[in-house]
Length: 107
Image (cartoon, rainbow, N blue to C red; front, top):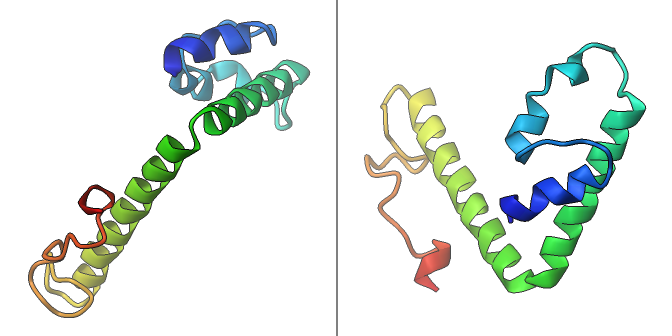
């Protein structure tokens, strides 16, 4: 996917090797508002992402489920820290990852 991202944004007039490099481009921080080139690049990026999602909705759904699982796990860990018990889950147990039943790969 990333190899194909660069040609997509090049067509918009921005030559960048990958999305992370685009995010850290210093040109985007020179003005308080997005420049026309930044807007064209963002539009090309969004268009490419839409193409990827439409091309493989099943893979997109799996990736989304994996991210949601990671966010939920992080929430459990941080909830445990709020109780003063590092690593404690929100339910008070000491194993925040004890249940993998909802993990996307276990389905």
